[in-house]
Image 1 (cartoon, rainbow, N blue to C red):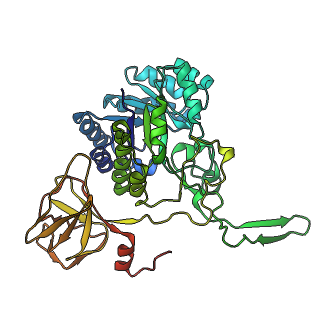
Image 2 (cartoon, rainbow, N blue to C red; image 1 turned 90 degrees about the horizontal axis):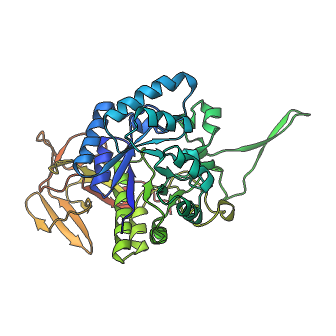
Image 3 (cartoon, rainbow, N blue to C red; image 1 turned 90 degrees about the vertical axis):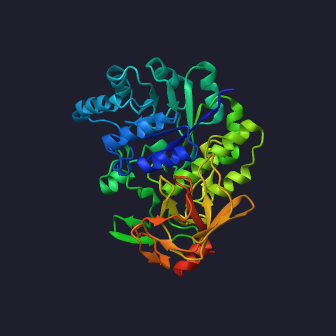
Length: 433
């Protein structure tokens, strides 16, 4: 049986490496040029992107290059030049959005597979057939599609690969077709510079043009004013049902602008869900526990199993973001010998260790640290905090750029974290309960 692919976001070279370490089969991202994630793409230039592709290929993994914004006439030659440059790096596919760019990519890079972006809003067999006939090998279907509709497409086009989003930010508009940001700030969502205006709180006013009177409409108490704020997609509890359908080739995590912690923990949770399904040991509660450690806007299972008009719980009206159950304390470097602080950490603190996929550690104790195991989790207690420059700390704070020596080598990109209650207590913050 061919396993479904796990596809994770790569906003920069570090997050690319973390996603692969935590179980991704493939990653997607690119330089900022003509990508729908300009802010994240700034961390990739052509040299680091080439390094990332080579790094993935050395490990038998894939990289899909995003060229998925919509061009103006004045940009067509620039698009051609960019696609040609990216093609030289030999990514495993080009993700594009428009029929014209599909044709352009086919002409300039005929040996690189074309994946159609979710921005194309494919919902049915008719549209899927058109793009398949144009040479598209995979369609990233609209977020609003149902699993039954995916089955219908696959029945007619069995050789067409289907990719679905299973986790991450949802859009207030129809699969990203939004103009609110362009209207308010001049930042065009479909060209990669969305200002996320839907995440803001709004006040509603009524205006009488005859009297030139304007008055504010009060919101019902407790309802909230984040009137366009969609909850985040979380399909982890339904991975078994999705995979049992046999029609989904790739499960995609949204989040090129998210943190390294998000890239690691979310990827690992879905890696476990996929592997457990094929092993006959699927346990949704285990994956949800990890996913709820991340910051989120509330979770929804979106529309894959229910039609949009059947849902009334996909928005968070009272807040734009909420803390997860945990806070990142530190991130171990690639070589596993140092770590950098992400949250105030002191000598004697007991911090949970989150390991990449396929590695393990043992309990130990020496003059520098103590590692213990509680249940399935490992914890580290630092007896000394010393930087590579020899500076010793009683406590080190978030944002400190000193590389701290690890008393014992840990797997590269190991994550250190603590519960959110402890993290807030260390900062002297009140908990939101």
